[in-house]
Image 1: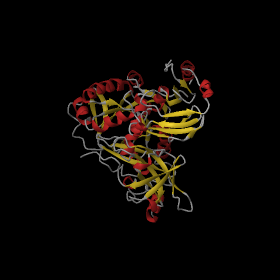
Image 2: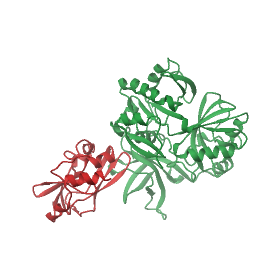
Image 3: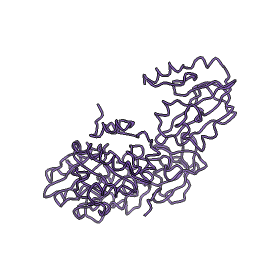
Length: 128
Length: 369
């Protein structure tokens, strides 16, 4: 069974979320990266956009396919990882670090509690 | 149904391949290097492909030439012995049953290699049209096929063949020993690079593969998965059956008129194709590049639209993806002939967002001579 960083929260759609002060940073998991293969383009919401939990906030294009990114929580986008425009491969090489995607100021902090722990997410992945 | 395994399945597992179901086979889509690195390795060094899922058959007998002449659009039957010929198999409508390569050994002995996804259909098609006129021997399940492609491919294979294959012209084949394995060696491929495709018995395939892996590794060579096979062929503008060519489009519409010899006599589809040629095609397969500012990639099935036209949808993307070696995003699609000229601006509906693209003529990638 794969392991995932214990300090993050996870969604069924293979996004991770990391509380950073008042805001939450969002990316996709190693499992998602392994499924997608080499990522060639990341298209994200803009700073200031409102994102809604479960709704699309961007897309990732790999060599072979395109996949939607779903917001793990609702809130306002306060930062995006602009470096991914020129180096989308950072998502492959460092999905929990340099490959982060957006930072969200959450509307409702309770939403964090609805997300999965690393252990629960690992079980979710193992069942796939 | 359980997917079939090629004789190299264990080898792929050992190499850490990501295996997926494809056309009824469990095939490597990529190895640990990943599709981008694999693609670039074929362009700059050499790559090995297991394409044993493809179909192989013989058409044999005193009247085999007659059957082959009827089945094929290209001048397969009149080719000299030892020649490999790319051809379409057409229906009477002019639609395409498959594209394939025929290998003429003699007037009474032709081999053909065809797409994995069409094996049952093609064998049935051959048998139906051969009827009692010639024998059709399906050797797909006993035959392995390994492609060695890239600028270093010829030297490497030649060294394993005691110097007997380097002087083979493009699109020829012969029997030769490669690393001690009896092979049919063809100077062909599906990547836009120079190289060979090696057919051998299943039982010998692991020995041949291991020898090739050992030979290419010091040259920076890698095993290559189906992901890069697709991106390489797209850059070289080689059509993929089921995407760019199918029952509903003719070879003339697909830009494959060079492989249709309307003057060779009657063949399946010749009447329809002659009529279409006389009238001119109304739609054509074109290559396009997505304009750089668009940050979009067109994929198979996306609509090509014209917002100024009464009928918005003018065509469909048949293949598309990142141009891994050439850069940008590239694709193929059918458009009305009025939109087919190089330089024409197209709009592609990329999942609800308009992306502008430009028609380009010729291959996206052409290897340096």
